Image (cartoon, helix red, strand yellow):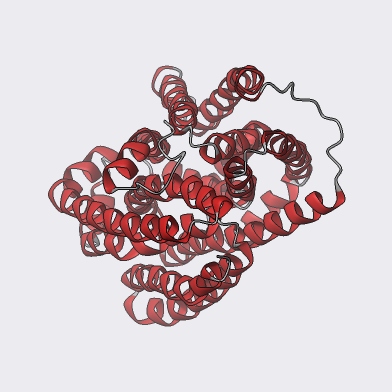
Length: 441
C-alpha cells in the first residue's frame, strides 16, 4: 500500500490504512513468543519455561542489537525514494545484505562465548543449563536468515509497500508457530522443537522473499541488482555512522529487557518464568503500536526528502494521537482477558497466581509507552540516529539505577515499576532531542 506519494493530504484514516497490514504482521511476531511460551509452560515443569526464557532473551538481545539493518535501511531508502533515486535504493539494499552476512558469521563463530556468558550471569540449575545449550546449538544458525529478513522488511517499509513487508512477517510467524507446535506436540522435542521451528521457518521465508525481491526490483525500478560498485566511500561512512548509532541504541534497549530477565532469575525461577509470561503482553502491545511507528518511518522520511515541514508536523501529531488511543484500547482488552490468556499460557498454578498479582503493570505500561514507540519511528524515518542512541543510553542507565533500588524494596513489583519508568525516560529524552529534527527544514 503506497498512500503517500504526497504527504500534503495526510489524515488519520490514511495512517490507519497504511498501518493495517503492519498490524497483522506485528501481531504475528509476539504471537510466536506466546505460542512458544505456552508450549513450554504446559510441559508441567518450570525448567522448560525458564530455559526458553533465558535462551530466547539472549538470542533476542543479540539479533535485535542488529536491528540497524532494518532501521538504517528504512531511513535511507525512504529519503532516496522521496528523491526518486532508485539506484541508491538498490545499492543501499545490497550493501546492507553484505553487512548482514558478515555479522551473522561473526555471531555463529562466537556461540561458545555466548554460552559461557549465560552460564556466568544467570543463576540456573544444571538441568536448565543443558536445555539452554540445546536451544542455542540450533537457534544460532537461523541468524543469517533473520538478519537478511530485517533488511528486506526495511526496504519495503522504506518504499511504503507495507503489505509486502507484512506478508513476509506473517509467513515467517505462521511457519514458526506451525513447525514449533508440530515438533513439540507431535514429536515431543520440547526445547529443541521450538528452536528447530524458528530455524526452518526463517530459511524457508528468506529464500522465498529473496527471489521475490529480486524480481520486484527489476519490475519496479527497471534495475538488475548486482553486487558491483557498492564501495562508495561517502555512502559507506554515512551507512556506518547510521548503523553504528542504531546498533548501540538497540543493544542498550535489548539489554534493558534482558535485565528484566536477569533480575527475575535472581529472585527465583518461578519469578523468571512469570516475567517471561508478563513480557509477552508488553511485547504484544509494543509490536501492535509499532505498526504506526513503522508506517510513520517511511512517511516522515519521504517528507524530509521533499523538505515539506507542514506535512512532517502533521504526520507527527496525528500519528502520536492515534497511537495513544490504540494503547488505551489495548489496556482495556488486557483488563478483560488477562487471566484467561495467562491460564492458556501455563497450567502451573504458582505461575498463574504470581502473574495475576502483576496485572496493574500490564494495563498501565502500553499507554505510557506509546509516545516513546512513536518517537522512535519518527527518529528512524529521518535518520536522526545519533540522538536516538544518546537518548537510549541515558534511559537505560536510569532504568538500571532505579531497578536496583526498587527491586531491593519491592521485589518483582520493583522490576515492573522500573520498566514503567524506563518508558517515561525514553519519551522524555527523545522529546529533548526532537528540536534537532526541526532544524533540518
